[in-house]
Length: 101
Image (cartoon, rainbow, N blue to C red; front, side):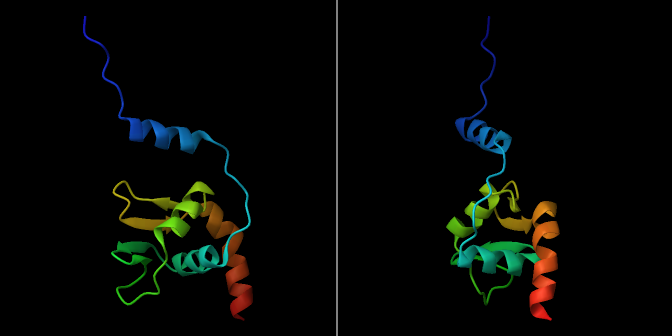
């Protein structure tokens, strides 16, 4: 008999992380900036970090991963693009528009 194929350890860890309830922590200043920038569209991964364009401003991978763990951003399968989740859009879009006025 053959053993059932195992999922890779990385996929198992990602699935375990996804099943955990979303953590509600205060956002750092860098995370707030990244979130506001991402509300306009998705961020692309460049060598210097995530940004909406090649000229920046750039946001660190660490800040983006913190937002992903909080459930406010999602990464594509290749981790090349980051986009704001619906939950983040509902929570922060109203704040962003009221602050800009």
